[in-house]
Length: 272
Image 1 (cartoon, rainbow, N blue to C red):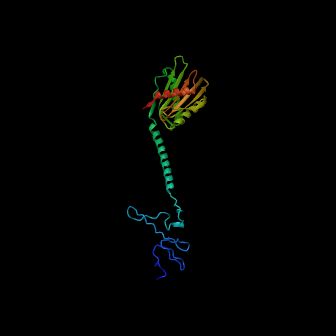
Image 2 (spheres, rainbow, N blue to C red):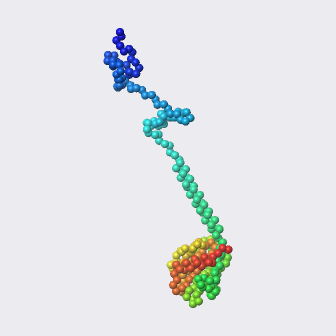
Image 3 (cartoon, helix red, strand yellow):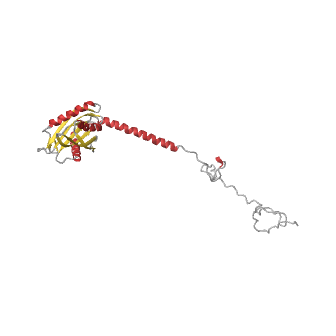
């Protein structure tokens, strides 16, 4: 009888025993692998397949990745130029928008230049314009002569004038000006007050005010001369007209004068 009564070791009982080691009884669990024995080798995981049948790459850090970065540390990403292109696109849009705004204002200026005329109404706030209208006409002619030195700013086609007054003379509104082609409305408003000062009048409290729904520029001030009482004076100007409105009353102020001027302008300035 052979010394090994159990016969040759069967598969599944673990690694072979060293010489002289006791043989475990049949049915006993296989000895665990120690430091001297490799553990049971794991089968490599099967690769998953995509819908097309091609093998999908293993999860985790791919073998042979550039840079030699260990698993779990992704390789540094290349710097993208996407931000640069976005910045350039925004800058280009702003430039084009600015050009569009400039073009719009240029078109708007040309479209409004010389498109309106001024026709003074026969009455204003219950006051007639018949008496003393020649005084207003003289003022309008003087304004026309003053603008002859700067034809590029104002090219008048027709002067306009009206004088509105109550029967007792306690209140008076004088309007004088011209319509035509005006290239610099705000400069014309300032020039009218400068001309008053050149003639010896005193201009105080000058301020810019709302020109109203017709747009353009308007300023008002208190004006005093040697032979007249204090007057509230407003001047409006747009690309078609320049008109000066003087108001005299016992209790006149710049806010009321501005409101009256806007009301008169709304009634007088119309499309040609």
